[in-house]
Image 1 (cartoon, rainbow, N blue to C red):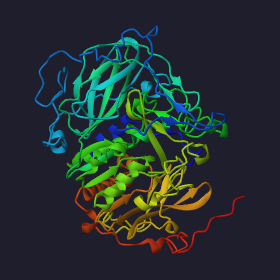
Image 2 (image 1 turned 135 degrees about the vertical axis):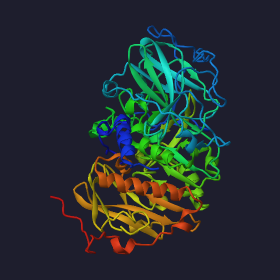
Image 3 (image 1 turned 90 degrees about the horizontal axis):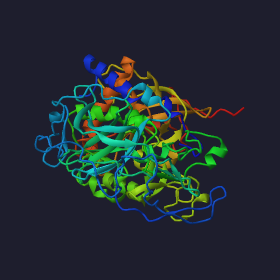
Image 4 (image 1 turned 180 degrees about the horizontal axis):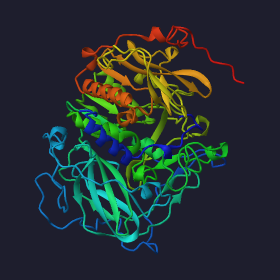
Length: 591
């Protein structure tokens, strides 16, 4: 997204709406089958701040009035449930319905065929009043966004009620219900915790809270999980976490975009875009943005899950219904544990993965270069270059992103200017095949290669439109930036870019290593999986099934090679886009 660009993410659909649509689609027969830190945070002059310095990790807070019932930070004082036996492989102690343990393939990867025979949970979503409430009566965060099975999750919760319970759910297909209950706790002491703490230099916001409970993860298979916090007063919200295997041998690695979630998180009053926490603000608001974003606080959006529900849940459900062999991770896990890509057949970027450090990008590029397939389901990937640093809770909990090179005191190649920009430009097109172009736009997706492997058999015609599928951000092929070849453009959609004519491209390219790389070219691709428009739902579902199946096979480009079609849509080497009749589309003059 541009430095002062953004969008109103409150308008995006919630998981409750998506789950209802998934169940409807299922009835219609529709849907598919962190890590070492990089050192202290350096801060430079940003609107009157000192030219350099170090943002020290916040010490554990002293006891505060009104926080009765919170546990000591050093002691997991809550045994989340009485000693009721559970099936082999499940968490250590548990109680409640739907607590049967996940079934593993023997390496911790999820056996989706087995998972889908287990009962799904009904009524697990938060209420509309909780989703829309500006000040939640219960909220929390975990000490890590991603863990290996057996690593307990320290949970920090602030609740208006005196007690609350914790329900662990694994997200997936589960007969269209979208989640399965894994574990529930006994009542846990609640109480309100301290207000947000703001660093005066970096404007970093954090929650200086005490540990409320420790949640076991023994025996869990890889997957996206949420902890539902259920206050005794009826309030509820979620805390997301991921269970990962250390390697992805013969599996498709599902990468959640947690760093983008934290960048957009307005909890405490600001985020990476605005002093007010919105997607876009005035110049003054932009100058007041947080240049360091912390995971040590709740997510204010997505019912407490950031972008997991709004942008990624649909694809998780689709992949799990497809019976694929899956591993899961946060994209930030690539920063210090790149070996998680070892042996992987493919990696799927699930939604809007905008924020990437140099080690992260190097790991994904190296994987492609040895034949690992990639799927970019969304748009505006790998656009912001960042650095990661530890917090008091653990490694890689702080994301540093000045956005403007002049403000970043780090003048090396780790400078947090955008990837395509000076002083160290490296546009993301070299990996994706497409390049980010614009935000805050909307247009129809136009199918231009109906006989391609992605759309064949769907009885589409050239020029067929899927209403409103392009936006609010999009990517396209930019010939002047020399995308990987051969690259096949299968949808080429006219779209306005800040008042100028442009195009969004859906692409597939073949790499010499045998890797195949898919780019959807529109941020809302996954929304099409539950679209109310039948044609859109059918086309996006079928295409998604085919891409997932392709990138879950070894070296997909050897089976489905790209047919280079760039010259059909762009004058080479000038890169001027062409319309469907082959005529140049030239920018109009600004008024």
